[in-house]
Image (cartoon, rainbow, N blue to C red):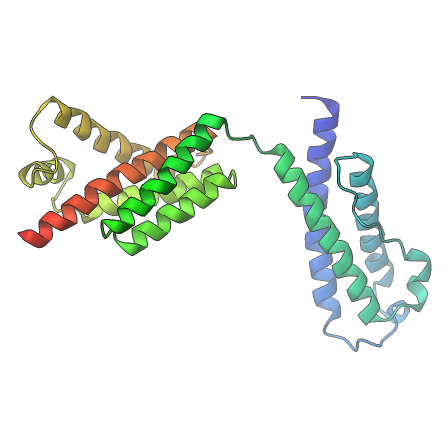
Length: 253
């Protein structure tokens, strides 16, 4: 990894900590009289140090020249005359700039989606409209939409976990005491036929169930790539389509 990337990762971690420290500082000060001078507060030196450190992080971010310059704030020489209300205002201003820096660094560090992956996502969005027209359970539809939104935001783990939740929920809703009996139930309802294609569908159910359980339960290190997240999202859509057929059959029986 290049030295610049390592420095950016280190800065990102420091900005995250500084953002939390500023939040604690300002929220702690808000319990006091807003006109009370900061210079007469206990631990005022520590408060000034937190502000100055955060300002230096903003300057460090700007030195990377990432195409966006943050508004630098440096009022340290005036701290002796500041009231609590003013230091709170400064703290929030700096925290807002740090939040922007964090967002930019996260965007840079996240892998991009390929054109093929983007096309797949768009196809799934169109399919969601079709599923809604087929009276898919609104809660499932909402979760599918949320999962699509997460992958578009490059939040692959969140996408994978939501998709896994959908898969496991649907499998649980299919009647049958175990996986094999659920498959037999789908065959009896002619949702899965008895042709060679049925074997592929049965294997799909098994693989989707295993992947979903690994993500939700068995693998604490589940951190999918973009392609892995799309695969399990696609599985969630496929099983949702089968579930619409299942619920329709159940209504007719």
